[in-house]
Image (tube, rainbow, N blue to C red):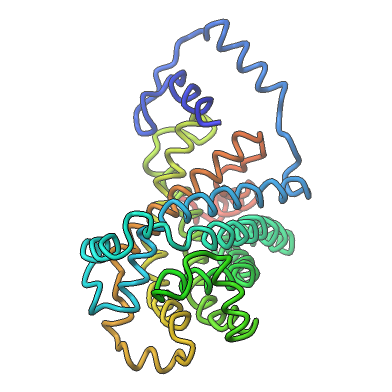
Length: 353
């Protein structure tokens, strides 16, 4: 998949996404043949169809499962910083202490619940986002949908994340126990039955409310900020329309917009992330007791590594998700554009520059 994208980027007449086009007057025969072949293939599914939504869910599984598992070592240190700041003083010190006590293999603790949990979350997050976005847009007329498109993004992403967190919560609880409670368990197979035996199945959803508090604002920012940033990049930064960009160049824009969105996501959701980590570590704690004990400064512990982690994660997730759409030849609608009827009306009223 990625080799074909790189080849498309290399054969593009653009040196990069921010440089002017240098097109030959006549395309080489091989380029013309490739273009004709691509045109004949067309989209693999219809936009808004059940197959389209299913493939979006698959893209979500790959984008979230792979990326969250890849940063398990950083996530492990971040969680330990949040729950035991006296022992793990900063990111570098946290890595040193973790490696000294458990070896390099110890940095992979919690990879299984991370992979399973975030794959399920990605399935719901991306797949249901597309479902809700199309559904909410269909409730509105074309001009209203365009004018209030940011609210549509926010509503669709919040709705999707509500269900995504229900899928994630049990695995997130097990992951935090494995990573922050020495001697409790080293694997998901050990942790799961022990949690059921000691605390019952309710323990898997003890952190659901604060998880919603962390993830719903995070996802709303992630999707709305990404959609808006893509619009702005193509409007003010990229010197040509999206349709004129190669697939590789479009993916560069996707990555950039994803990273920008990720930074804002990390900041918005960090206090709730700290509370979730503490709740899953201490079965007697409550949200109120944790916030009271930590104070304002305490809930922001570990923000630095989380910005790095979430910024990179979000950028890679959008890149992988969009790359899957390219690979599977799925419809990829361009950024929102003003409806022609609205444009003509505003021009007639003298309100459009």
